[in-house]
Length: 123
Image (tube, rainbow, N blue to C red; front, side, top):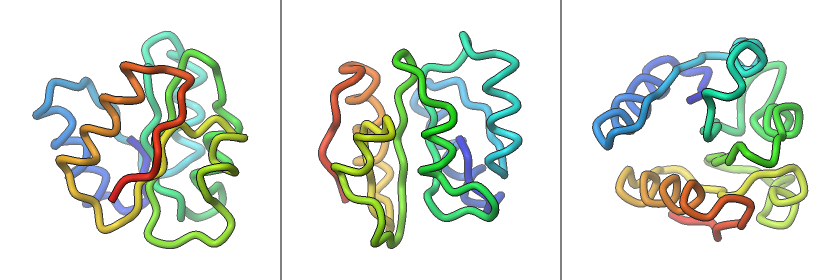
């Protein structure tokens, strides 16, 4: 779980934990890449915000891209990223803010159940 706003990262991380997911929270993309490099086999999915300083969520997804890791990216606004662009960098689902946690968790479940298949934007 990657979001530069700690309160948001913790809230989403706790929600995912409530649904049985094991979650590691990172508050910047570089921290996430470092963690990903240390324990790549422990990661099934990357959940990240689009808008973050220095390394945006789409660039994080592109750098961390591996066929066995699903990526769910969420954003409040992004002209440069649509479903087609997202698919090109390995993002399997794109959710729009404000997030409905029920739909968000459902989207994560869908990409984990169907790896390498893009799930339509939700929200």
